Image (cartoon, rainbow, N blue to C red):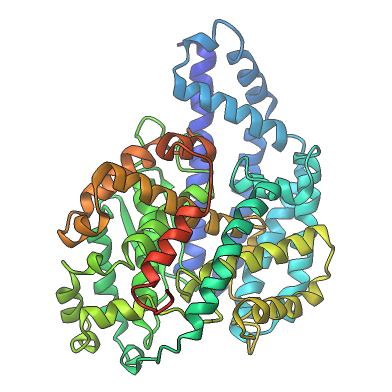
Length: 501
């Protein structure tokens, strides 16, 4: 290889070091950092982010990428590095348009905004967060006006998280789902399933952590390449691709099920990251920049597998031993509870059916912000109206309403739709998997979850970002995105729990 290519690899390595340092700081700030440590951490985060921005947008890197793309140099690259160079050029062209002053201001706004969101949620007071949200919205508009001048602002935000999925495409897919889902949800909710007080019994948090360890081990989380901690909002973080992937959880003493499924969900994210091909780990091709694809994996483990009664058959007796409050709860009653459809307030605690409506609500609120110019002061009322429209309930306070998610505090507008795209992809992946492996019910009941994980790694995980969502769907499913398989899955599954015909 040429000296230019060697220098490019050195820069990629240095950019990866900066990213690792920032990830470690973020982990520390969200898990174990004492309150008085915030300012020092924020200062270092700003410094590292700025240095990374400068290197990633340097003239030297620009010239290297340009020269390596020329005939002669280009032919010497393997397919992975051709992808990496192409992606870096595209990213740099957009990033170099952003003035450094704007970037640094965005970093500072984000750091303050995240802290304000935590304070606001703790106090259940949107007014604490509102001025920070206003700044975040404006700085995101400013950034996208530089980085994506050819695109409408919200489409640019969507493209950051799921390449090729603009609002027109998402509107089509979501409308297909909504048209079939709304009458189904109404039919299910019309069946009054009583609450089972046994699932509100206190469960020792340390015992829940032991169940989390059991579940993560069972689904294939590699403890030599990962660890766990606690945070206000569960998340997965990759410090080093394939070798250091971390997850957090939040435990509720009187709602153990929520912690169990958060563990499975974040475990699905982590398993994806732990199984990316080593050849592309810690490069721009590693990880997965297409968050709908990433969410499809976390939600596949959480819902398609975890809410299937057969997932629990091999391990439920051990769960009962670790959680005495579940000792007198049969597997059948447990399965009925984890598939209990409720018109609840909290997205992360909702069932897999109404969850879809929670995401559609957020998608519509984001469009209202960026397309209709709805003022920040009016967002709580808009949120509450849509909750009433879709689910027939109204939040009693800001913490269970508009403040429940952290995403807007760090500027992740356009992220929410990826959750529902992930679920839509899952319906398609389930069809493809069963065509290859046979009944997932049988595989789970026989404890052969490793075969499922291996199929996902072979078809999806190992490629990281090498294939965009449309390419993944074509390669794995042989078709474009459609909500039909997910709707069919919902109808077939929930007709077993509810007399809905």
